[in-house]
Length: 245
Image (cartoon, rainbow, N blue to C red; front, side):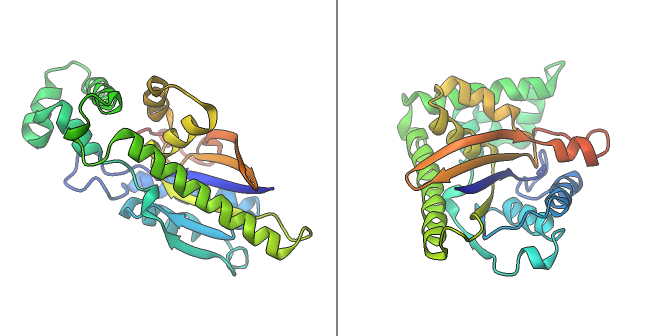
């Protein structure tokens, strides 16, 4: 039986010109995860990144904490099917003001709780995208996004299962780690548990930066073992180490 670790990237640079860049706290979150893996002597047969800068930064920073002996024969690769959906387009289709950074800031500033206002806007934008009623507005539809995520996951599991078969039953179980984003992890959780779309929106907001979701797999079957584990941030981190945006 193999294991796949899905890691949500560390906190990105929300509100800046380049969101796709870890914040100072984001680097610390994935560094703490790497220390956790090092303490548990967890090595990996393959490392997969979703193709975004924040995925690569998270992978590099996290795994730099591991002893080289745990990564001696590790395969590193990028699979853009683990990339996040275009959240900017999803937001702008629902809220055209998002296309103008200053106008959007003014819109949020009208609320006594700007972060809550943003969350509500984003959830409404997600539901519009998922509804299928406005499919021509988006470069990638919700079903297309979800299917590419599932296809990417199944490729990782199939590769690991094949490697396990070639190595023999006595070889160590295959361990893969994927650095990706919250939307991808939420979509894959939906696929594995059969959740309705509404719960995916809620789940997406509950996934912490730097948290780990663990999957187990055998040939032809993938199951959820644990979801959104951030014990490493609670145990090793300072106050404020747990974030969701």
